[in-house]
Amino acid sequence: MTAAAAFLTGAISVACFVIALFFLRFWNSTRDRFFIFLASSFALEGLTRAASVALQSPDTDPVFYGTRVIAYGLIIVAIWQKNRGR
Image (tube, rainbow, N blue to C red; front, side, top):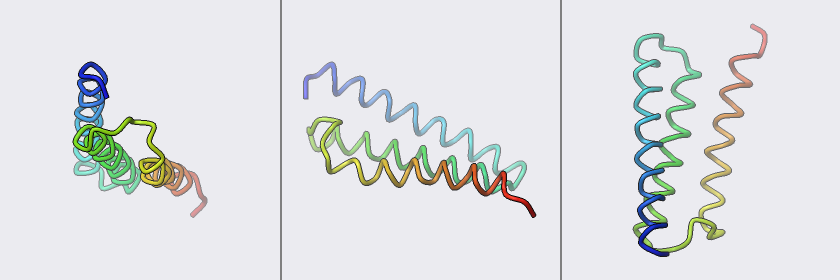
């Protein structure tokens, strides 16, 4: 991984953590489970990006795909839970 790629991946990781904090703030004020699912998803994505920089492996390494599937699955679950009938 080049220095520029590591820098950009680190910036994406920080952005994911900031987005997770925004969703945590919204969850704190509304207590809606939708926001906690989204915050968890972005925090997991941020951890994945940070791990790829720390391990000096490319962002497209298959090891990281499993955690991305879980993160995107959390978004799908959040949308499904929000739209299901009561």
